[in-house]
Image (cartoon, rainbow, N blue to C red):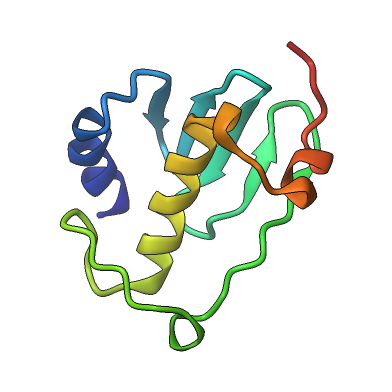
Length: 104
């Protein structure tokens, strides 16, 4: 289901650097390439380590209503991660940037 949601979502954001294969979103970023598991949401830099991202439970943040997600919080998390890493040049969080090994 998450793969189907992403198939419809990616063109809305005009993202052509994301491909979906099996249970992964494969992202060709500007800083590095990434894979995001569509089941668990784990992010790995290709040929590298996991990139740890803290997820804030929804009860601790404002509600954000996005037209392309369902009620499943894991789906929201995964789609958010795909969108974040597809535009990795825009990442400002030093914790995340320190984990990305610049290989390009």
